[in-house]
Length: 196
Image (cartoon, rainbow, N blue to C red; front, side):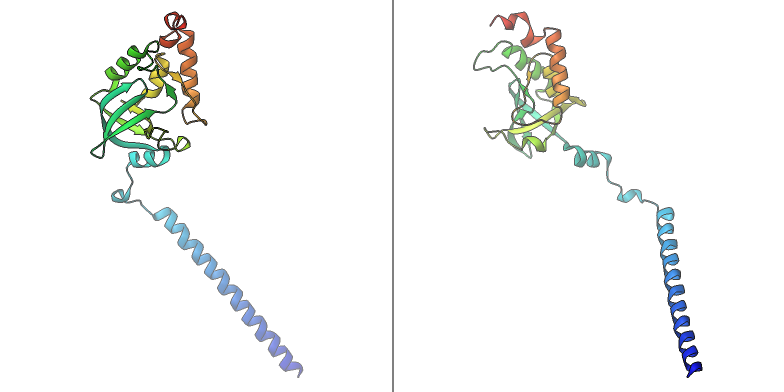
């Protein structure tokens, strides 16, 4: 019986050892395969995503260009989007109202017309602001030649920084631009407008 016990122990130890060696071998094999995948894998250029697409997904910027067909005032424009005329409200700014004959309304509208009317622009949405305002206008930042048009309106003093409900992507930049415009007494910050 003593020999049968020893044989059983030896058998159990042999099986356990074989299982352990097998598991360790499998682990080393997997590590070897995975390290080859990481070092030997070459990305095929045919499957690369265009940088513009990646930027669009990360930033919300469309790389599509839209023709500006009308400038309503300093913060509202019309563009052709997907063969449809869409009214756009520029996020983060408030320009002088034409209807209220507010100070610098004509200059604000003219500046924006000169900048983008009958030209192609790029639109950027801001998920923090929603897609439409209460008047069903699309909410966007407008870019032309990589310049943020919304910010240009503020830095020229022809629009004020405007936070509707919550902070937006370029809020700090717009506030800084407004600070500079005020310091230089530009546009709506000029003495001409402070008298009204």
